[in-house]
Length: 120
Image (cartoon, rainbow, N blue to C red; front, side, top):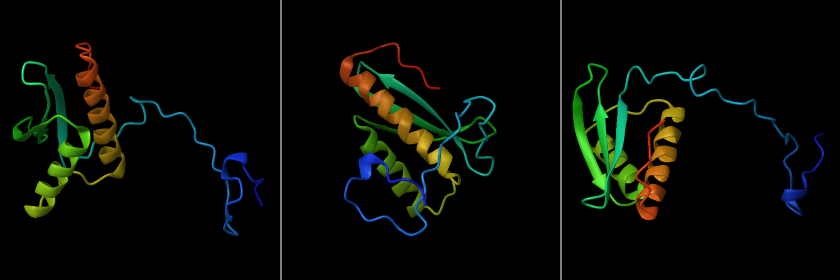
């Protein structure tokens, strides 16, 4: 059994509980495209005070564009639209996590007025 981490305090641990140490992720070497899906372009429009997201196919065509002020508003609408129209834009969980991370970065930059935001 793995030693109880101090941050779980008095919580019950499952009999198979373990702490898994994560290896560092290399943004370039470890990245895999969501080849059956799409990719996104994210930018901040300070003139209209919003984040803009373009959903692109691998022919580099913009399929749809979404805009909003908060990360949660945008990814919720993207996933709602994808489901409602029976699309498969985001097939890998890593791709979904990346979208959330980048949208949150853009939201923070928008709120702070940081014009140096760039999409990783």
